[in-house]
Length: 386
Ligand code: PLP
Image (cartoon, rainbow, N blue to C red):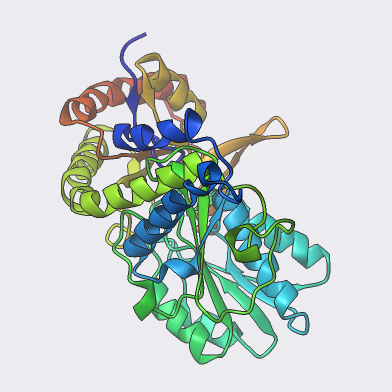
């Protein structure tokens, strides 16, 4: 097989070489438990502190507001369930139809347990109606959880404005920042965001580490209880290597933020413009302006996304499709459905998500191969008149 061309960075990212270097000592000689009384274990604590400070710098908050978790999913669960448990008298949750399952599945389960859950709709650009949000937040609303940027389309919600609306109504605001952190500058101290989730593996750190930002003074019940780690806010012996890694990744993300918005965006735009031009019946999904610099989601009408991925795979090209095989049938993703993307387009939607490690040569290779892939599948498609 040829070289891998990895354009699936919203699924997971490569661990940065600098991040891997930082992790090594904790997997070899520095294996002590940071809670131990002895110097050997205790010395590790300092690296956790440094990492906490580094993540806080990236988010523009205080290091005491950073809690290390195991992943983005845990952070989302901990935020939602932790707030509900701290405000048992409030029974309403507001979210959107396009959240990641790490939020949506939790909300739907809570609905089946008796909570009132409102899933806000999006328009065909994937954007929310903020008047609808404003009308929905009331005294019974325990938490509003709305993602910063969508993993499938890259669409960015106006989170500062949303947080302002929620705060003015006296509710708590959580945002799933998993896809946004490192790509969009943030200053949480100046915002009205109460809680924000991060995942290490979307940020060139490894899988198995995440962060939950909790604004100072926020009333929240711990999700995982046991030992006194993380000031009893998240029990469990720390994943020290992972924590050191996310600290380094945060430092690199700050340094590389400009590259995301120049180099990566330029490559994304080159790829997108070329595919929309050279492939017939191809359309962009989602807001063209308000979106992540690394993501493009394109529908190639009348053909199956899965089939496109299989053919791209033969060239070593990795991307994702907007449909998933559920119970033997290909279902368009909930995000495509929420945006009202027509059936024949939703099925053929492909997400390309880039990173600072992609090169122009790689993008040119995809641009060269894609029209033939699409044409070949169209010849086989029962939806195309021959
Ligand atoms: N939230 C969003 C927006 C995501 O894209 C993902 C992962 O794809 C998650 C949450 C879950 O993160 P993790 O894989 O770290 O559990």
